Length: 400
Image: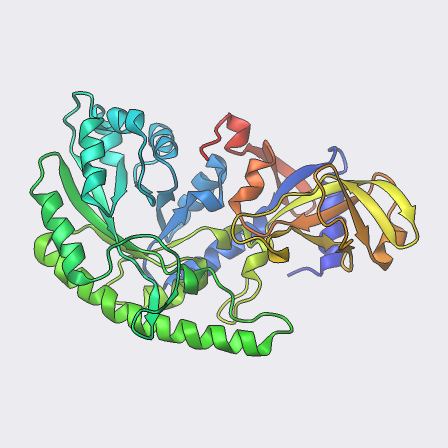
């Protein structure tokens, strides 16, 4: 790995002919991160989470590498678009109410064969049937398991509020309901343990909090591994030819892949390595996706102002959802202004070495959300831009 100063110099050289604001992906770092995900998956295929990439060219790049297979999408419209673009295995990770989309799916054999939809409630099956518009193609269905850790008799819950299905009997019951209903087939089971995969366990300057998270995650992994295995047995008793059992995320790839019941793991953020994934003891990656904002003002000693930069990430509001000034190192936000819509003051001694027109490089808090701000990702190898790739936004696609 290069030093931050070396990376800054080569990013500046590579993009000197381009006007900022701009976004880049360092392909050497991207490929190294992909290799690390495959290593941690230990032989089980990695399904790429498209919401963390949001660029067709980079989805194609990573899926061409050994160890990766299939896409995990986030809306039905996106799933259909990807399937029409040639991606043959698209798992929609969230339930949908897109009636027009379900009508297309039910009327197109190619789309129906490529896209699997998420279901955790019989009412979702009713909606799909009502939207068929005369189409009789069989709809591939995945069932989702609630992964949350419940403590003290259920009075304390840790984990995302996703599926209402938690126990083996509930999943098996829905599998039977789907199997008995014409036009549907259960092909998979998914369980995303976000409280393990998406929560760092090594927070800088917070040792007690970090230890508490590690204890929680250890208990959560043990509980979920036992429950997931029981759920898979129960569902396979109804659907013996279940095609896949998907689990995990970037932060839990190796632990989830170690479960015998899991046949594939999901990951996406680990390719770009946004700032929220710096705080893990089990792995480290290389920042691959960055954006640059130009210095437009020098208001005084120890301060510069860059254009824009107010790109907060989704989730519970907090400073950890803001992009972080990354290069040059040592810059910080003005606490009275933060990251601004059209201008962002930055404080710190490195500001005195920055001139009007120089760049400050930022890392986004999350991965694919950066692509909602830029039409193009400039792809860097060494100290050259070797190609450019349109983001979803650059292709005129804004799915959420």
